[in-house]
Length: 393
Image (cartoon, rainbow, N blue to C red; front, top):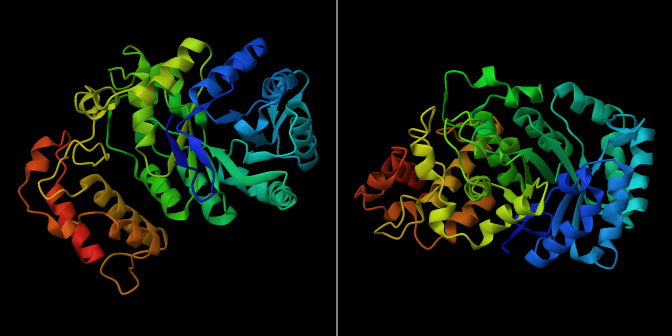
């Protein structure tokens, strides 16, 4: 298993995490899912459901091994009249949280995820109803270690990170959703009419979100990496072509700030298909060639950090240089600061990350070999000049 730091939380999480779809749909499978997860080195799981039977099943599955797993569990997910209901009522939220602790047999949750916030008005409700303050209280009491938020809307997620100090973001990450503009209606993400006519390149708000998370130290746990299975099926995929589970996971993990991908596996075969990422070779993980061949989607001129441009004769890590450059620009623009002004600066984090690279943009030979390899026609030599002007070397 591979592990990554979850933002600035200090937690190291497995790059593959356990979603709870499998044991929600069949509670009897919970122990088997956790057995397989432990065997594979998975140490992180998401518990969005409020179903009492599922919480009980997870509690039994965790008996004797709570310390081996990092729990991401959701505030504001409640159970009423035999079904799940998202709430913004503070008393309902408190009761549901205490129920989750009792049923899962634990004294604390590692990441308390404020559940499903896709609208500005909803974020305002979370703040105004006392939900955010309650999450902070739970953190002060040690009942949750870190405060998270789940969302499908990049604009709302950025607002929550800036205003609420969100430490972990659960976000829907796949190449299809990444091309869609922000929406307050989650159904737009899988509405056929939204994809008519094709798409070109990543939505700028989604790119800014990933870069903001990287800059702020907000770790991302990924949901919907397979778009509910649509992008694994050529007939269902909006791109007109299918990816493998390994390629989908590889894409999600290449986004800035992403630490782990929650596998919404409904059976062991699907879970194993996600775990296969760990032992997959570079060719199996590569998604760039597939992207370049998509009949309905274009990524022309857009760097997706795929590393096809490597190796560089000057041994520059082109993908990292480009990423750090983009992070600096995004950090300044998020504060209303533009290049060429006196206020424009390189944040300490990006300056240090760039400094420790073995080779820097200023060493570029301008040979253009990288550009002959790039599947997307990125002007890499111009990017290296740009990076040198920002960092100074």
